[in-house]
View 1: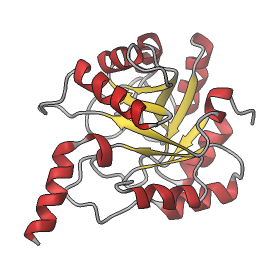
View 2: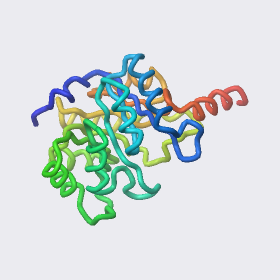
View 3: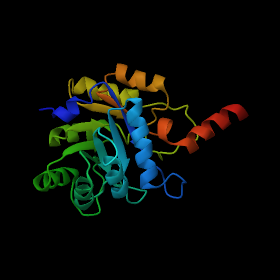
View 4: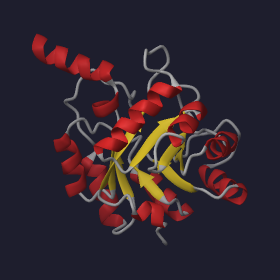
Length: 229
């Protein structure tokens, strides 16, 4: 597998996921762009974001790569669920498009492999596979995705009210052992600097942190819960 220069530049680096959820005060493209710029100033190597408006706003604000996705729905395949969503992310300015890489049914009837194939036939882009299991990771590698991530391994809502559960180190280690040297990224439940360090030490190509940096609602709940315990 040939590793693209952009992906190579992310090795050993921090990626920050900048997202706000429906109904939250920060859910505005300009706010997300400001958050992304602040993270860039802090030294992250790339931004992961969702929604066409946010992708476009952030791409216009930062100089680092943008990993774009489009969430639609809340169950099943909702991270860039169709080819149409993926192409739209590219057109909005994403350097890398993140797709749900599970084998669950997709709204347009395509398989994950067909989606990646058709996307590359129509767009010049890099693909990030958001995986749930080692089987998903194997399939993503076989399809030839540029980056493989443990994003969906917990299969739980992104907003957490506790920081006790950390990243899926077991899946990360299994994947990096099976595919040494390939870009296997750790994402999901990386809540603290110690979590990020543990993921890197376990072999992660890069580490994605979202809630622990860019979601003040969850951070406030964690602090409040600790004080009330």
